[in-house]
Length: 576
Ligand SMILES: Nc1ncnc2c1ncn2[C@@H]1O[C@H](COP(=O)(O)OP(=O)(O)OP(=O)(O)O)[C@@H](O)[C@H]1O
Ligand SMILES: [Mg+2]
Image 1 (cartoon, rainbow, N blue to C red):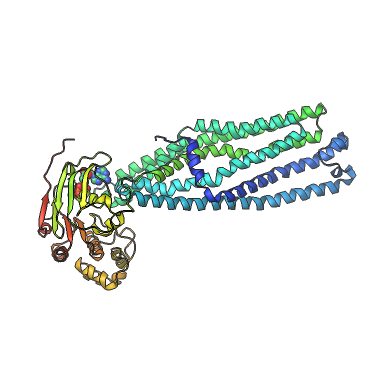
Image 2: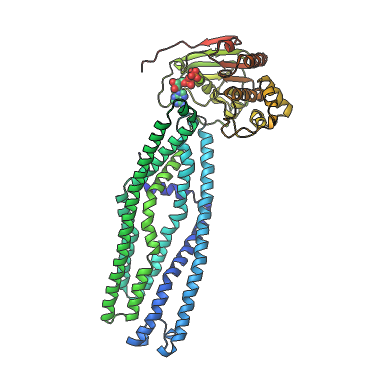
């Protein structure tokens, strides 16, 4: 997979989205730091208690690390033990409360941000559609909207604040070590940097692209699953169950292997970190022991320093573990940022003419898709479809008929030439006005999992029930709807699979009739409809065509008959 941004740029892009939530993030960092210090100070307080006994045994009170008032003769042991016990209890109890509050803040930020990013993604898709959704990458888009955005939760809830918390707790602990002896401060700093900076860096080098490979295989598997679900009928029809299953299992195996490689590296890095922590404890023990022997610090202080070293690695170790997921998170972040910044093939126009009328004309139009797919018919194409007439377009499959309608809808822009409605260029009218003036019945009508009435009403949201029924009658679907137990209230199942192809087309037509726009573009409107229903629909279309401009794409001769003129696309054999 090609990376176009540096890790730093991705983090900057993701951080820029924190925006107004930075105050809560600040609170999470402060709470996290206090919580981690409390956790570290439970054993440190214990060691301090022990130290005060030891220092009494070995040294004069003025050298002890606890305040003189806290140092009591051994016969007053219960009072100091009580003091320490209270401190430990308070740390223990408040550590839980503070941790809870920190996590609540982090997750509040993360989920608010994820919701915000989802909103942004959908707004971007709205801008990029329909061209973006015309392509074949719906599976990876779905994968992105679901798993990539989820993965960003790791960044917002478990990356930003841990880094800051590790920095702040390290600073406080450094003060503790330096207070005992500056040399111990240097030793501690060495290990903090080793575990918190060097280990994550080495980890990410060792890990290489395994995390990214895993995520991309995961995306691929999603795509296959999506294809299998949508193509279930074809799979059954052509007895491809075994083949598809084998393919799925093979890809699953590859994903598992990538996962295993990633986990092995994670495990190695965990072992390495654990060994380092033990080494850090031993080194601190030896150094502070030597200092105590030389009389520069007390024995109790040596014990406190060793315990402090061992117990204060929590936030720094969290950084070491972060690098394991950070690569995946950044890869997800990059895909999300790429989509957010993707420029639409054709930007919606907010300014320009409010309505369209007149003949439809193509003037020397050239068009090819972004992937360079050749459409010879749309090369220096000049033609006029007269207003108020039914014009047919007939030609071989794949010659570019649907593309021509999509150009008229301004889903795409021509590479050269002009497309005009009357005297107005498509680029000089508001896109919303353009689409409102056109009812477009696509080759595949999409039905929402809602009632039949709601699906037809999409054509005109404020239509009365009577208008909906009138439109359904024109599309020859009214009787079929009335024969259903719940009539217009019948719910269509999620993918509309309970509706036949012909019924689906007729619901699409009803939508278009209800929309009642001055232009009606029909792409194969009768391909799945029996002759009887076709006859009724054509009758409605003829009536509609009397005072509307209709463009009709069809392979069906009987349908084409209602066209007052037909554009025959010549058959051109492609050499490439
Ligand atoms: N989104 C797209 N990206 C790239 N190529 C595309 C895209 N949509 C269509 N094409 C290609 O452009 C050519 C014209 O497609 P189009 O759908 O316009 O054909 P058509 O005349 O409507 O065919 P049919 O009669 O089968 O519906 C085809 O070769 C098709 O593969
Ligand atoms: Mg087509």
